[in-house]
Image (cartoon, rainbow, N blue to C red; front, side, top):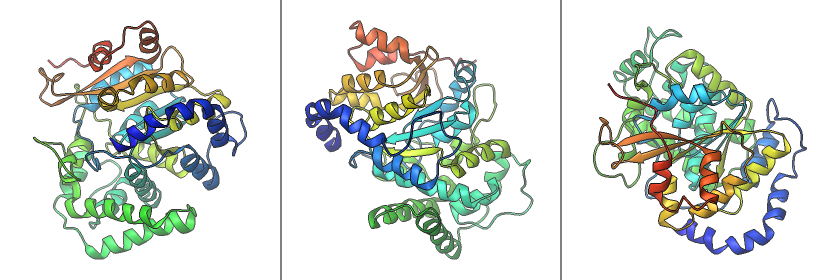
Length: 378
């Protein structure tokens, strides 16, 4: 992929200048404990200062294609301590992990600038919407159905919204409100391409509504992919719902983090010279620990591009402890016993790094074999 080739080509220079580049990305804010909130200037300094150039992926990836990603949440909650730092990749499946794991701050790093634009769209919609009902009304540009309230389940919410048609008038008004919040209230210096990108993403949710999926956002792919609705009404293997729209409490916890500017989207290659190292340096200065790192299946592409080693070195520069945990996704060849094409796995970050240093991690299969599946389907 173009951006990964660029990252690899610039790696030698980056290693020589790495210490300078990380310091220059973090000098804007003083060291100390993790902040209770970031002001708009601090937030944008992190977004812009930590980001790398825009990269490429084969899909817009507006919606996850991992329909069993909640299966690991019960064990994650028993391992990962609240109050740490969450790292992730991709769109809003991160929100469900965030409300389950209760970090102080989250950084979402993705090779595509479109992912940053999508997270800014979500940020605006969450800030504008005091309740789940208002959020879904704005997300889909559909009038809020009657009879829904704080006690409504996700199934009840989506069943009700499925019976309402989208409104061009609401779409136009909501898009204007999104732009107003980001550009005028927060004063984020977004360029015309970012504004257009947010409009494209928001238009995709308007066109497809709750049924937007990975396969109808961008180039798509083979087979059936879960829709946004499918992912929001999904549960773990015991039938417990963890999504950020599953309860009003989950939604309010997520909204509070967005209101405090504590979910920070960053453009970056996991094996690149800047993003992860800048995040790690900023966290170390604040004596903070990465407690969970959601990878999806990014490592598959890093091995294909022969740059996974640089990712491992970047992870080794993060502040970790004995409980720091990877969350991985494996597709197709891991899913033989699942009613799905994807399986979510967890792995100890320190143990993986030790085995990497000892020469035992050399292929993508090695990292999958190093992981474990804590969910058992009866």
